Length: 293
Image (cartoon, rainbow, N blue to C red; front, top):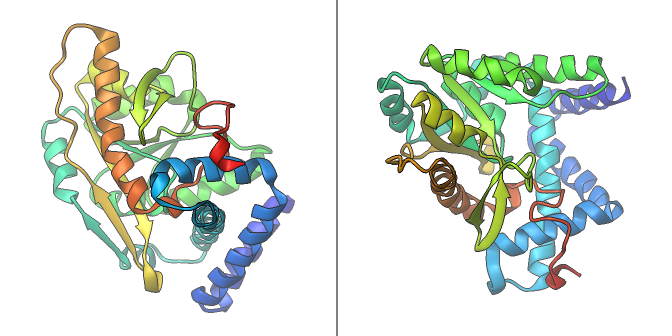
């Protein structure tokens, strides 16, 4: 109940005051959280190091990590504002590059899997595409149930349909079988044992391979996507070409190749907009680089 109240308060502030003012306040909240959350701070810095490489000094990397926390809270404000905003108020400020790639993938008739990271505002990206296609997203279930109902209700106001991760096994097959669109963020549970190892941002990373397995099973096209925040309350979405792929017959090798193709595209957007990538957990495992200490 407290979390719902806080979200409503953020949304109400953004309704009463200019968004730039609320975002400034949100950044200050992010600064406090960044300083008071040593574990999240360290993982965010680790991710920023990987994103920008050795060309940046420690202070610059720390600044990016702090901004990523503030940008995450901006996303929370944006999500909460959906309670009051009309859908056209959201989509009119979004420019989308590469929408033709989604259309081309849909024309193949076997469903499309939009694959992204927790970057920018993925809910707004879904809102744009939901105006043209049936869009479903796989989501984690939050606790308590009332909080989960509130969050998922906000998402469904954008026109997307929510599939709880517990129901995804059968639900996603029905979506793709109807030649519809499925959205999945693949950086939610890194390091899982049944994933595949790829190279991401110059470093080995084990990632879930569920979207690749779905593509092999159904023929659905994998389309990397993201949507980032720009100045002046505007947003820009990107959709890449569907991953080109010829099965080899070796399932494990095919899974790895598909996921590597997706990550090659996604890392370009991470390097371009590192402070809009939200990583506050051990993405590469429990060992921290000495650079972050």
